[in-house]
Amino acid sequence: MSGPVRFAAPQDGRLDASMCAAWARDGFLVLDEFLADEDCDRLQERAATLASTLDTAAARTVFSTADQRHARDRYFRDSAETIGFFFEERATDQPAAQALNKIGHALHDLDPVFECFSRSEKIKELAVAIGFAQSYLVQSMYIFKQPNIGGEVICHQDQHVHLHGTDGHCRTLVCARGCDDRERLFVGHPRWA
Image (tube, rainbow, N blue to C red):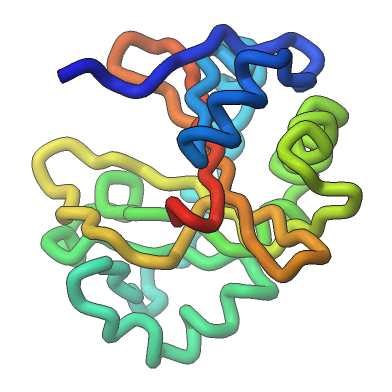
């Protein structure tokens, strides 16, 4: 079985005809090396800095896609307008740096490094290319993949970065650095998400 069609990311964020056709056909795109190494490094370094500011005495809200208890937690709900820290299920007794599941959900509004990335011309051009005349950033996260303790991520509706269009649909952008240190951008369509 072959994997999804992958494309070399356009430097300016503008999609060519074959990328647009894949988007229309499949409902998603995989763009390799969308971020420059230094941009990805900057985001990783900023996430580490944010994690180092965490008050370790504060309550630890656990994030799990299998158990949605966190959705009833005031800290989680309020994170839509803050920068919140969420922990792995099996790591609440670990030091914070090794126990974090994610940081979110208003990084795009409240942190200058993440805001610069989220509102970059490259992201704007990509949003236009996938059909947005106007888009809104609704949520942003930095997700950690902790070795040996990370919980299973099952299908859920809590996405990484939403571009919310005037048509009422959300598109999801997921930037990931793979095990091979190559950056990838996954763009998901509402029929996929």
